[in-house]
Image (cartoon, rainbow over all chains, first blue to last red; front, side, top):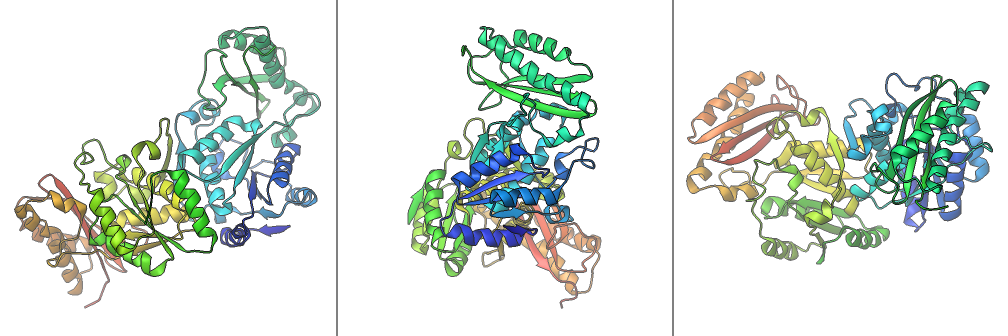
Length: 284
Length: 284
């Protein structure tokens, strides 16, 4: 497994790799890897000739009041996991490599970033799109693997890739969950045992929504009411938002007439968690 | 000479071209080609294996009050000139190809776009960076050729390319001028004979500035006063700005201590013209 810390060196290495007609798969991460990340890595290993994983906690996508300083890190373990999986190349830049003095260029996507996570975290998506574009220019991947867990982020990146005519295929892969349904997240490490249990409020509310749709309810307001009631059964949780959006455009919808994302965000103590499912109308 | 109108088709064609280790040179233009554009084309033909020229009048870089509708066009002549020069590939997209319904992604560069042209044309550079990034993703050139005539634009693009880690070399090539010093511009076609003469006010003022520096004046305020006085000798002209900026960063300077751009913009009737020179301190 090759490890690069400099943009220029990984660029010239991968340029040689790609010139042999090799298909490159890329999984960008912030490290502290779990089976969610590794499912993306496995998908890339299966479908591509050469798999690149980046580990970089991008400060630009955190607001000053967020958890950048305490975001969990364990590089040694990450590298061990990636080596075991059979990853070809790892990219480990530092902040001065990604944002040198005088850095001053920004990529933003419009309306899709103004709802959901974009309301609660107004500068978040500009940080995401800017770093992902930089990483895509560094790796020049054929396929970019992203997790459905961060569905809005994945759709924002997909929109950027399309609008900017990048010759990159974006694959969004299923959320990996604990046995009881909790979506894997590096941030779960923040949770005490009690909060860990209450965090099931997110998936429970989502399942309540799914069930309502199975019973034929299609008005989002009615579905949301049931979801809020279920969420309220869990103590110590604070709901941030519930959002219903088209699965391709992430435009908010008022009723379930096609494949729809139900996204939810809430706080377990200080820890902000998100989750989502994709539902179909009339599927019983 | 191959002509493509669709992003996907030129992308897959050039991908094949590049896979043979061929070095690609790219000259983006808005058409109505003159010897300034063609000097960039010639430079690319000389130094690259495959030369791509785009002809596209990008609406996003024009403000509503600007000259988009009357911007001169002569595609037939442009193609003839490019064919004669020996260009390999021409890209001729239309607006719905470059900005399909729902297009919503924007690239912006910070402080360097807030001065000079950015003051007079506040939305201009976002239009430029967004379209150039799209074109660079379409063509995936090795070398991008830009003209010094639009020096601020060239430096903004160079900054974007660097900040976004694009593996592209940006070459800024000298301004081509008429015998009497007028910088070539597609917009010169707007000028009546009388205005054409008054338009020499720009290069005359620039030469006055250069001369002042040769005489040892280094304070920009003093140089600008002489330039304004020279510009004022021409009738029917309105000065927009005179700007002194570092040749690499385009940061404004107050005295000439290193290689410096003197940029000037003014109106000849309704027609807005720009020009610039690069000066060295103490060069007599």
